[in-house]
Amino acid sequence: MNFTVLERILLLNVLPKEGNVVTIRIIRDLTKHLGLTEEELKKVNLRVEEAKVEWDDTTYVADIPVGEKALDIIVEAVSKMDKEKKLTEQYLPLYERFIEKKEVI
Image 1 (spheres, rainbow, N blue to C red):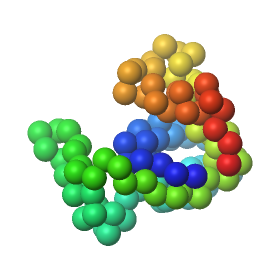
Image 2: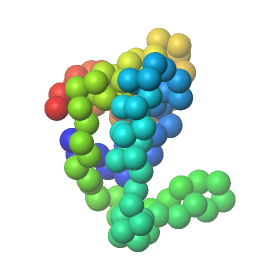
Image 3: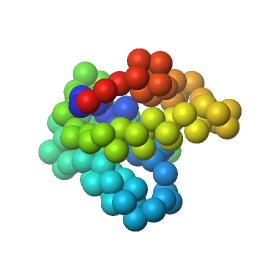
Image 4: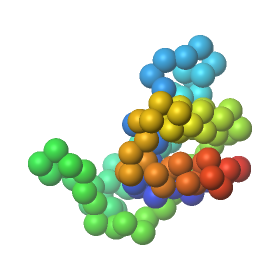
């Protein structure tokens, strides 16, 4: 599944920190793939400036393996933010992609 740098950063922030053993293993694997490699960091010139993350290549996308259960975890996490009224404008693209469009693998 293709993800932009922004989507990857946002997803890393939304994934649950707790769950059962299966869920945590899936989250661990997904987190490993969502994180940018050293090569990607150089390619997009990602940097943290004054407590905000910036990068130059905003068109860069990466194909990240996302299994069915991982997709369910993403959908559940974004849905939970919406139900708890914790969804902010910054996370709206994730909501639109995974809830409104019901992204599939």
